[in-house]
Image (cartoon, rainbow, N blue to C red; front, side, top):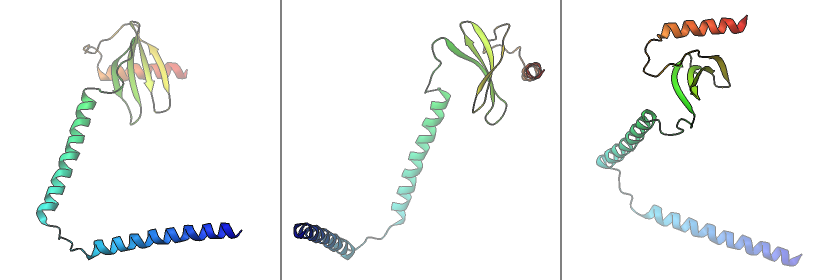
Length: 144
């Protein structure tokens, strides 16, 4: 029991020495003369910060445009994409030369219909009004 108390006292003594050492270091640092912050140094800091943030935004923009990240998987190709809400989209995917119209939400993906004929990304024969009309007819068929 006496040995345990001696070890505890030794630990407290070493912690006290460390604490006193830190206090003297802080006291010495506060005794040094502090240089005032000048306007050019603040401007330099703000310009550097703006340059770094600008570089981050430019790289993010190019990464989004170049579609860095998960690319189309082998055998699966995204043909068309239409946003219909904040988290809802209608997409056309192609798998083994067959195209499917999918409804995508934040929690699930539903097959709306298998397309009878393939469309391409450059095919402008499908107008947005026609797509919404087809989507409405598909949704009506699902409810009945």
